[in-house]
Amino acid sequence: MTGDDAADGETRYQLLGRELHYRAVPVTSPDGVSIAAQDWKREGSGRDVLFIHGFAQSHLSWLNQVASPLADRFRLATYDLRGHGQSEKPFDPGCYRDPQRWADEVDAVIQTLDLDRPVIVAWSYAGRVALDYLSAFGDDRVSGVVFVCATTVMAPWVVGAAGPSMRAMAAPELGVSAEATRDFMRSCFAAPPAPDELEVMLAIAAATPREVRIGLGGRPAEYGVTLAAMRTPTLVLHGERDAVVTPAAGAYTARMVPGAEHLVYEGIGHAPFWEAPDRFNADLARFLEALG
Image (cartoon, rainbow, N blue to C red; front, side, top):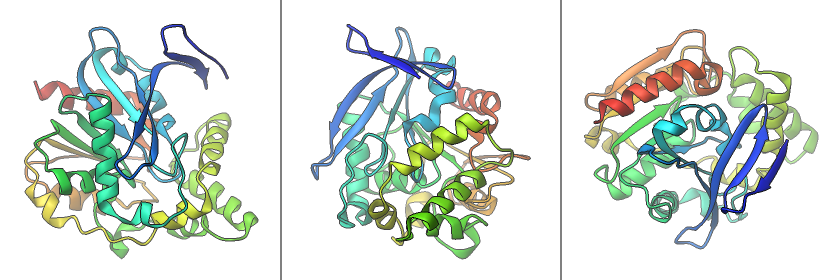
């Protein structure tokens, strides 16, 4: 990896063979947590899209989107959830258990980046974050929502085979936690990614402290009323071999949201944007273009 901060204030570097080019934007949430956001805007780019990553990852989850032609056609934005990546990592469990804090965090990112009714693309745990935002602010501030292998309800039938590994990632013993993190990251894919890609993902996961992992777990996910009240265009996309959040969760989300489109990727696991990026990008672009 090589990188530099360009004279125009933008960050440019190479990672895993991709050329990255964005403007780093510091955001402060209403509760004072510092959030690292990235604006991938290009000259002439269209509709605003906000990508939100999942548990123990970062904005780099969207590498195959921000380093693709999507970044020329649409204004892409990403950020690191509190406790993740380059964002601040408070140990206070209250920073992660209160849904209003998540809602305010998303709103702060949207306001600071001056996003115009963005489409929110939410992966895995970010399904909860997006729904915290929609529960607090409604869906008239967004143009659409894309749920990607997303958690929108907590029930035994939602938790896939990777559940024990995910819980063990918060174990007090370093060896147990490290092994569980390795197993969890492997379980995110039906077909394993290239070794160097998995190594980067594991390094990113290691940046999420144990205290944050504990804080993220165990909070309710009572979003039925919010889902049923959604009137914004919605795409629900799920991997047929998802071992983290079962495909039944995607079917539930699509059933709950009026008029939602539901796509299932056969042979794909928990990270379709990484395992099948060309298909994912094409489906996302079609959804975005249909919004007008």
